[in-house]
Length: 119
Image (cartoon, rainbow, N blue to C red; front, side, top):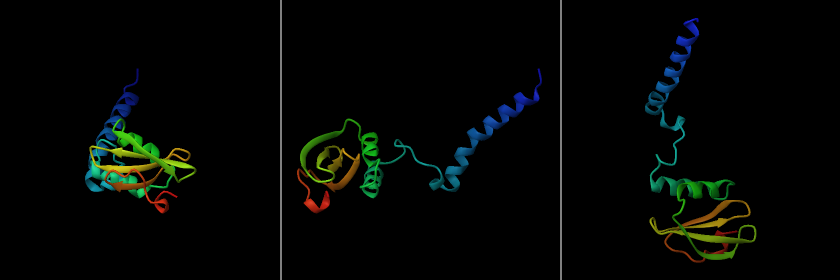
């Protein structure tokens, strides 16, 4: 059995394992943060920034799984939107399930958004 390929594999694995820590120190923007690393306010800010983009509904579910309470439905988006309230953070998200997007985000318990906010 040749030892060189085994040593090379171990060295390469060690290099990849150690690489992530210095990269975070040098430029944190180069490493995508996971949901566990973001603060609640950062999650809300990210959802606000991404509202209207496909996939923002998936982000909402990942960030606040089990913490959302439906409090209203209204015309908007591609038909109707559901207003979901997060009691822990006192934030309401308006969600269009047709396109899986967040169309509005607002502080407080909002049963009905203004029509121009959820179009």
